[in-house]
Image (cartoon, rainbow, N blue to C red):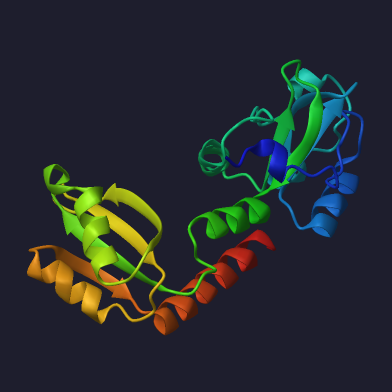
Length: 218
């Protein structure tokens, strides 16, 4: 199980409530992040964003009055919960604290994305199938049997809401040529909504990754 403890780094600098905004902005530019943790006596006060710093003349004063984002995770937080928190607050880093709010380090969004990519098998050779069905018709046992009968294995799977109340089952398989597997699913009455053979999928993944990295570096 991948948790915060595995992903955190101590390389990201911290601010105090007495630092100058320009110094903080310089650090953000240097480390290519849009947030920095504000820490006093090793206790996390919160995160300050680049946008908030632009509106401040000084960080000095009562820390409680700073426009801080109160978001953090604990060392045993699961990677999916970390990702959810990052998405909710649009964070470029996610602070990690212990049970007494002592600051332990932060997780970079790009490291989080890279780990999620590995978890989903995106770096492994193969292709992707997207099946659309009613939830009552979903049987992972039957789906696995059809795939294994075609001498293939499931590297990762996820289920997401589809159109019209249906669900979409996303399957990363270890076979680059999906034609025989697609034919098998169609014979059993499955709707193959989309498929990404290895060459097309790899190119699409690279474009999406490059775009994400471009956004993170702005």
